[in-house]
Length: 175
Image 1 (cartoon, helix red, strand yellow):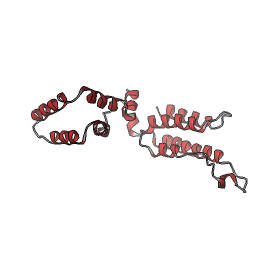
Image 2 (cartoon, helix red, strand yellow):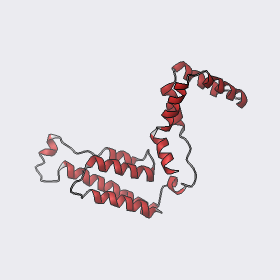
Image 3 (tube, helix red, strand yellow):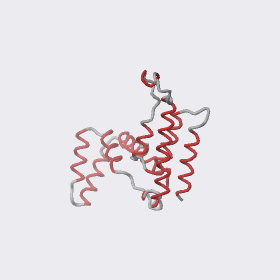
Image 4 (cartoon, helix red, strand yellow):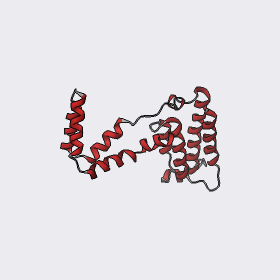
């Protein structure tokens, strides 16, 4: 199965030599591929995001006749992707990909972030108190009352916030 991932990465390397190469478009497509292989929090993705064409006066005054900032960006991108290929060939797919038959769960931080974004501080604090109730039936009753008393617009915004989060969108695309 790693052959498919390696083939995708090699296509990205080939794109670096296209005459109509667009660095930003290449970065976006490369990030999407690497997210699927390594997950959203991969250092490889961070490195790709950090690639930029250097327009500083120092790079424009290169007296050694070395490559331009644009060529350096392409070279750096190529090095990152070649390292990815070597890793896949040597170590295989990351565990998260090997276990792709196991459905992913909603990351807790997505839920927490959505609630924090939409609830007032007092509502969020009340929700935290309810979550600490030991008895499951009592906790469920309090949560039902909590959300029943809430404006439906807020509940809708919480749900939209959760479903539009990039991590949830990524999970939904892999299912």
